[in-house]
Image (cartoon, rainbow, N blue to C red):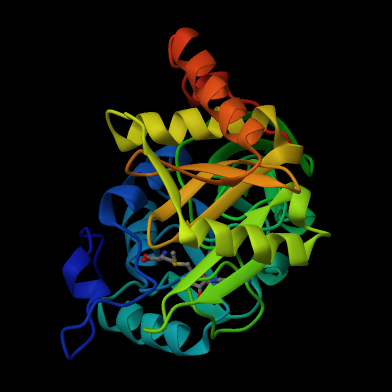
Length: 315
Ligand SMILES: C[S@@+](CC[C@H](N)C(=O)[O-])C[C@H]1O[C@@H](n2cnc3c(N)ncnc32)[C@H](O)[C@@H]1O
């Protein structure tokens, strides 16, 4: 029997030494787990077993008087995690292959629920399977576009969210089959184009959800590229600024990725402007869109750079 903290490298690397694609970064996992406020004996539902590291970490927190039930859509990952959990003595943790959006009613109620993959909206099944005064930590959409995410910490009482806060974080979207290309979002995608060496560029924009020819056109223009330097001192500021922009204008929100990296910003049916994680302003079409994005970021700056505590979910 063990309650020792699992070794990250050991869990997230295959026998042949490669990193498991689905592994999240260790500090990201620890930050999310801290939000849960775990105690020995807790019954936990985890969505997104992945490498199994987080499952073992949760099990080390609850100890053998608790129970960890982990769900992943990918049966190979579930098999691997179960083999490792058994080998490492975590007999109070088990993984199941299923669509996590349904939760796992057989072991409900749960004192804590944590997800490592972004659902379209918080599934009622999770709230129904939560014990009274349970805590749920899950990535959520801030706007109806890919990658416009934050982490929600919610206290749940009788199947309803009672109190909530938002925190930085972004995770792959839930999907319904094990195989997908993690470089292309599965939800809210409006156009994707591939370059000669097989790298995708894509756009996901609320005003373009019904306008896919316009999305293709704007994406092609973006790839031909208009770029301007912006100065964002670090990724933390970028995340907070963009979270405020997309929640202020969810109906204009936009994400786009390509050779410039990943950017978030705004769009119309005739224009797009995003700021990338490295501070590039990438834009195409109507200049008004670019001007509006720059003005929104300047307003956020003048307001004293509010963080996630000042943020409200727009959807
Ligand atoms: C970021 S990874 C999990 C990281 C993991 N917790 C770790 O310790 O490294 C996200 C996982 O969610 C899983 N997933 C995606 N859609 C899902 C769904 N609908 N139901 C259950 N799991 C899902 C993926 O297969 C992937 O393993």
